[in-house]
Image (cartoon, rainbow, N blue to C red; front, side, top):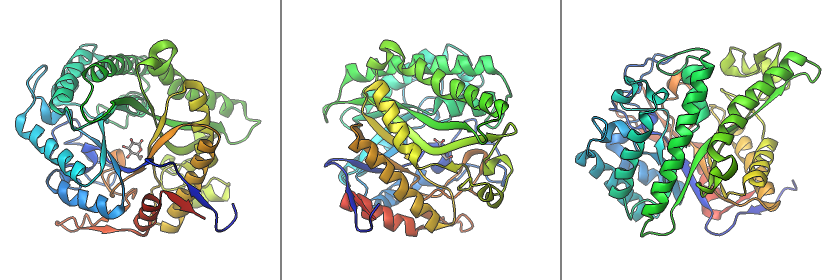
Length: 415
Ligand code: BGC
C-alpha cells in the first residue's frame, strides 16, 4: 500500500474493545475461581473491574471507542436453576450499561464466555441437556430485565474453543482429554440453546432500536507447514472439520442461519502443522525458532493478516449475514509488532469490505491486560497496561492504545 493512503470505514461503523467477566471482573464464583494458571495467577481479583467499571469506562472514552463487547456473568445472577435474578448484581450491571450509554458507547453483551455457575458445572455442564432450558430461562429473564439498555446480543463466545479446551485438550476445568463425543454433544447443546435464545431475543425486541443477535466463531486457518506432508494435511483437514465446519453447521447450517441476525468473527491467525505438531509459541516452541522457519507469531499464535480478508469474504459469501469482528488482537510486549499487526489486519478487513462484505464493527481484544485463562497474566493483549504487582492495579495507556484511539476517532486508518 502506498504511503499516505487513508482507508476510510463506513459511517456508524462500531469501533470497540472486548473483555470477558472471568478475565477482568474478579470476585466471581465459577469453575475458574480456584484454578491456578501456568504462571501461578488466579482470576480471584483479576483487574477488579467488578469495582472499577466506571474508571474503565472513562478509559474507553479516552480511547475514543463507540462500542464495547462485554460479558454478563451467569453465576452472579442465579444461585440455582430457574431462580429469580439477583437484584443487587443486576443493578450493578444496569449501572454499568447506563454509564456506557451516557458515554456514547454501544454495548454488545455476551451471554456465555467460557464460564458457568457452579451448580451447572456440578451437574455435567453443557454435556447435560438440562443446561439448555436452564440457560434459556436465565437469558429470558435477563433480556427482559435489561429491556431498553441492550440492542446487541452475543449468545456464545467461541463454542469451539470452549468445548475443545475443556473436553479435548484438558486445559479448561474439568480438564478432560480426547472426549470427542462429548465435544460434539457440547457443541450441539450450545447450538440448540443459541437458536432458542435468538427466538427469545427477537420476540422481546427492544425500545432502543432493532435488536441484533449472533454468536462469535473463532476462525482459525489450519494448514500443513509443508504441502507434501500427508499427515500434516490430514491433521489440518480434521481440525478444520471439527472446529470450523462442524460448529458452523450446527449454529448456522440450513435454515438455522435465519435465527441469527449477524455473525461474530474472532480472528487471530492460523495454525500450521509440522510433523504433527502445531507451530505455535504456546505449543512449546520459541518465537525466535518459529520466526526462523518463517512463522511470524505473537506470544500465542501465528499471525496471518491476509486471512482476515479471506475469512470475512468466505463467511459473508456463505451465510450472507452482516459480520462483526468481535475479537482481534495480539499478545506481545513488542508494541511496534502489535501496531503492524493491527494495521495489516485492518487493511485486510477493509479489502474484504471493499469486495462487498457487510462488516458493521471491529472490537479489539482487549481493553486491558487481563487473566488469559490457562496462561494467567503473562499474555499481554491490552490496549491498557495493568500493573498486577501493585495492589492498586493502576491502568496506563500503551502506545497501541494511542494508535487505536486515532483509528476510532478518525474512522479510518492511515498508512
Ligand atoms: C477468547 C478470549 C481470549 C482470547 C486470546 C479468544 O479465544 O475469546 O477469551 O482471551 O481469545 O486468547
